[in-house]
Image (cartoon, rainbow, N blue to C red):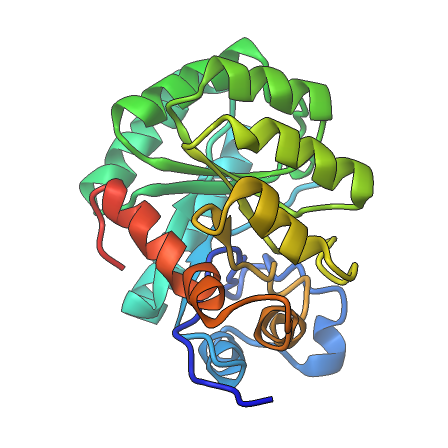
Length: 267
């Protein structure tokens, strides 16, 4: 097999600072610090990362303070990593007006990505709830991208049907049944995308099926670092003989660059 160099942008990461937001289960075994982030990713061939910071509080997971602290950490990491990092904002449907204010501040600073949102870490679960629908409407007005952790198939269906014009990226293909629901959901929604992070692409033939069914222009590379190993996801696309060079170029970087350009940001 002859390998070529590809530009690789990891759309789905959760960078961390020194405030306890490193969600890698084996971080103690690796001695991970924020200084490891860029080197880890560049060693995997990744030239840029995107994503939110996950600050968890098991006592009050749905508090506004947890969301604010997640975003405060994001801004600090953005300052630290510079152009290597395309930041994602945390919001919460329980706090619609406060979330809109956070969106406005983030947008004014040049941010165009909301999420990845991970509801179960912040005490909510329903993507079809009224509060989140209002926030999706606002994101659509601002022409922003919204990245979500896939959960609740019926709720995601209702959200997708209600917000066809919102630029939504669904994370994690999942197992067979989840992947087929993604395919059914996304086929008729040209503004909705799927990122390859997390569970799923270790299943032989799944990436090929996603490209065939959803389209080569709406599959985006992601790893879910530091929860997941970025080397494995790079290899899962790079060494897949069923994918053409053109498809790999689009998955690795072309599609996400085009998506951000449509949101008014060059990355």
